Length: 346
Image (cartoon, rainbow, N blue to C red; front, side, top):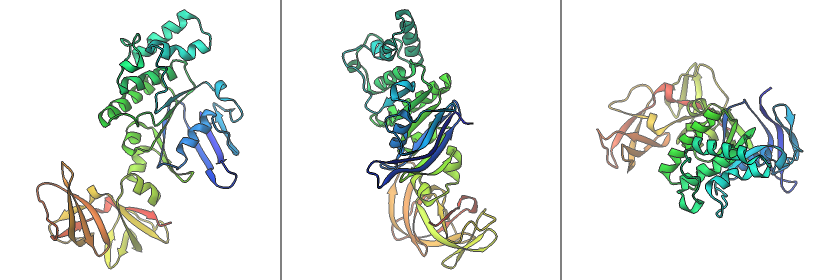
């Protein structure tokens, strides 16, 4: 039995449309699991079900084999960190972190020891006497994290905690969150809509769409082998084209034959996809090639991206700065067979 188990969870706010439908997910102790998806997909609702802020219409939620659906929020012993920090402006950093321990009426000496230790773990040991307004956004987020962790929760819940930080701080903080999570070995649920952020720190990722988990796996597996067109598009695949099975590993698209690494026909209706950075601009036609004309060129800093019109449709292609193409140029696109991903076209 896994440490965390959500089984057949259904949530409906109006009794008609389900926000979550037959949602199943399990987590091992010490894992950091991310719920990834666009706004409205149900990831925050899932987190609120786990926290006890929402009661599901159906289903069960077990932690360490204990059913918690009917257990109130204050008895679940979970730590929560929100995107708004929710710090008390009139309390010092140390007092903010100590707040949960004081509610539990722990001894003053114990509180001081735990707060000091947690401030050190979170890189705030020298800031205990300051107030939130004196801290940067990244430091305030660390305070919120320290406050959630100091109560030694069974589960840590993070609801888009980095969305209010600038790009550089987000990178720094996600590294810190992973470091602290691994150091303490605490099971963590992380909600985000940022694919890069999610993949960089997660042990497992649940990609959600319309209240359903479309794929639940390691970041590496999802990145390389998405299962559905929605998952593929959400994690950065931009180019899709319909193909028909010809023979083992061979597929056809409007007269062009493509070799792939797939040995079996995955479905009756198949769509192929490939990332812009995986398409090569070839010097001449060969296997897995299609001719195209450059329509738009965009500068990306380290490289250029081209929108190329072909007989299969438009493709986004990333090229190097060694050979720069102009709008109107005819080029040959090569699709390496190991980079082509086949999806069932639902």
